[in-house]
Image 1 (cartoon, rainbow, N blue to C red):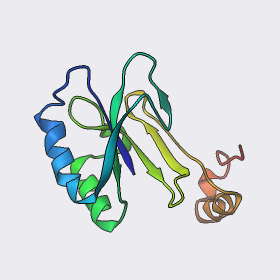
Image 2 (cartoon, helix red, strand yellow; image 1 turned 135 degrees about the horizontal axis):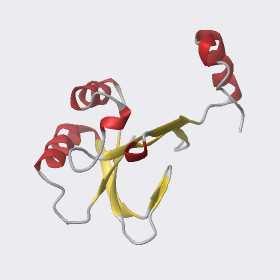
Image 3 (cartoon, rainbow, N blue to C red; image 1 turned 180 degrees about the vertical axis):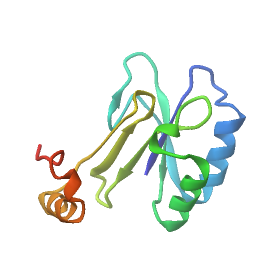
Length: 126
């Protein structure tokens, strides 16, 4: 899983620091980047945090934000992204634009169509 802290100022603020502290047991690492799934920065860089996804992380994420689109600077890190074990993208969120999408395999699309027939019309192949 990825979370992003854009830093026009170097100090992300107490709210973001507090949230990052709560997630620290799951932290795999962080790096300065200009690009992550769904976003490319042209002038700045941001810190991209990588987390080990699992039940414990999911519970902490639920405690911290009401929805995918609640992850917005300056109150929270941004753009939660979930990756598959092999690093391929599963879920992309662009929080401040209120956009999210999933990249599903054909098998996953078929499972989603069967389990959620009301979504069938929006599920499509790339």
